[in-house]
Length: 201
Image 1 (cartoon, rainbow, N blue to C red):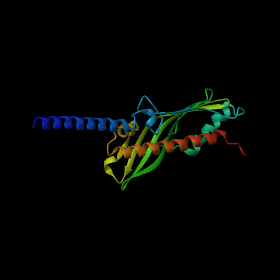
Image 2: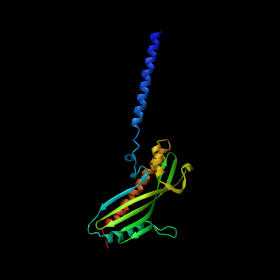
Image 3: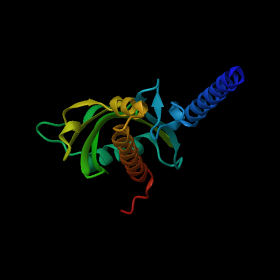
Image 4: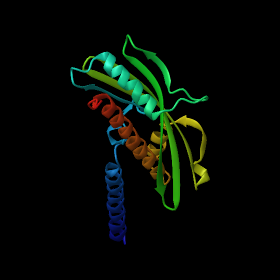
C-alpha cells in the first residue's frame, strides 16, 4: 500500500512537470511583442512613423522638387471651404507640411470595416533629394459591426494596442494595420512618381 502511494506521488510530479513544460513551450511559440512583428514602422512602441530620405536625379533642383510637391498635393488633396491640405509651405527652406487622408476596407468573418486614415506629412526637398515624414495618424471607422464604429478621429495607436492584446478581437485590428500600411505605401509611391517622372511637355 505504501509503495502504491509512492508511485502515485511520483506520477503526479511527472505529469505536473509535463504540464509546466507544455505551458512554457506554448508561451515561447507566441509572437514576440516587438516593433519588428508589426506590419507598420513605429517609434516608441505605439507611434506609427514613416520616414525616408530619397535620392533623385541631381538635375532636379530644390525649386523643381518644391513645385512638383505642390502639384502632387493639388492633384491628390483638394482644397475646400472646410479643408486646406497645406498647413505650411516655405519655398526658401524647401518645406511643405500637408494633411493627407485615404480610405480602405477590411473584412473579418461576416463584417466589413471601412476606414478613413488621416496623417500629417512633412516633405523637405533639396537639390537631388527629398525627405518625407508621415506621422500623427488618426482614423474613423464605419461598417456592419457597430461595436467597432469610430465617429470622431482617434489615434491609430489603438490599432497597435489592440493587436498586441492577442485576444479574439485582435485580428480585426491587425487587418486594420495591414490596410493602413498598404495605403501609406500607395501614398509614398504616388509622391515618388510625381517628384521623379520626366516632364513630357
